[in-house]
Image: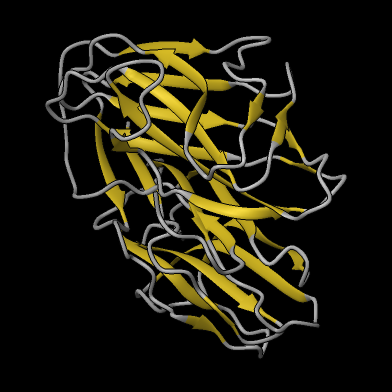
Length: 302
């Protein structure tokens, strides 16, 4: 598990690794759900060790299959101390495994005493050759946190696209383009992926998360993010596919998670833009945590 000694805010988008295209005869779709009261633990101990809170068995994966994953447990801090809550999604061999193939980056935020925290995690993953078939949502904390029962779930869509073609993109490990966000409230690209040639009516599914740290010691920092189709890896103008919005990272929070996602059908005017960028801006200069988020994208060519 990564060291998370400093406060953090997380921003993640779904764009998976290298480009790959699959064509086959028949499309198929399967859904999986941890369902009501699907929590596998009632609390997260104060040992900063990952444990599985939700798990679903997606069955045999064929190379080229796509997993679209979403999970959102709720944990409560009944202690008198701030609690650092970490979360990640992994593909594993069993319902208790936590060290397998990471589907997204592990990241964290603080849950203050008396408050609730919801680590929303999501991923778009293209399967290679693997025997692993359990999708697990794992959490860890440095204070005892209660896992609220029936306040979240893990849901997975498994896609075999058949005759449709698709491409999957990922900003990858250490894909951050910034080491800090200057405090001038101006958007800059935190993650970028080049989608290559996109056409009118193509469908884009994108998810992003990034982690920043309020180390000012005293000031609230307003943290804004958006997703945009643009002309370069540093572009900040073009076609927005997810609106810009913001929240404050307080000194007490230290860590925070901002998540962006989009489902977008390409228009003729947007087809000229082939870089998808996750933009961030802040009202104070704060560091960007490295390898604590990513941008992942699925492009479907109908």
